[in-house]
Amino acid sequence: MADSCLTLDDLEAMDNEARARLINCLPGYKSAMLVGTCDADRLTNLAIISSHFHLGSRPPLLAMILRPDTGRSERHTLSNILETESWTLNAFTLADAAQAHQTSAPYPKTQSEFDACGFNEDWKSNCPAPFVSGSPLQVACALREHRRLDINGTHMVIGEVTTLHYPEDALRPDGALLLHSMGAVAISGLDTYTQPDAGVSFRAASVDTPTTPL
Ligand SMILES: Cc1cc2nc3c(=O)[nH]c(=O)nc-3n(C[C@H](O)[C@H](O)[C@H](O)COP(=O)(O)O)c2cc1C
Image (cartoon, helix red, strand yellow):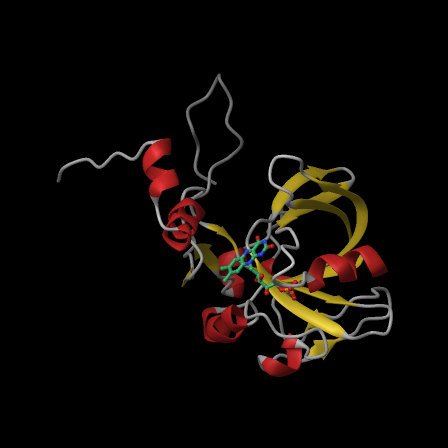
């Protein structure tokens, strides 16, 4: 098969939507989490976000990148987080992928994606934001830092994990979570949802010993 090559000039000449689809594939498989938020009046919002990353584990910090407000569409997730300083991350299974994808549609602020897309709110006493009822992995985050990035106006939102809920049998004795046993989905690009299997696992790498399976 012949090799294809695109330069920056080629990318700039592409149609905007095609370029967005292409560039979104380049980081490889990504997180698939539903972000639950609400405003000060508890009007809820749910959005699929794939730009999550681990920033540190002590304190336990997770971050995500939210698009800028272009004036053409509002950014309800961002404005709710800045208002309440709280959000939830909720994993979902392939059975819920179509509903999860639907949360990316630009619903007006007065219409909650929980209702519009067929998810139920799950309010827990120690978190101001709503979780997705029945989600196999629910993580509460409290806002610790927010930065608007100069390079393109996107927003980096950093949260500290304050509580998490998961099935008891999904926790490995060494502390890792078995995401595949929960049926948690990953995303390719902007539109393809996939469920990884158990894969292969290795002990922490060391220069003195060959790679050892777990
Ligand atoms: C697979 C997928 C991944 C997405 N990832 C992000 C993301 O990382 N950041 C972002 O700002 N929007 C992302 N979006 C777009 C949001 O889901 C969409 O803009 C949504 O309407 C935002 O809702 P809100 O305005 O209620 O916050 C993604 C959409 C899809 C389909």
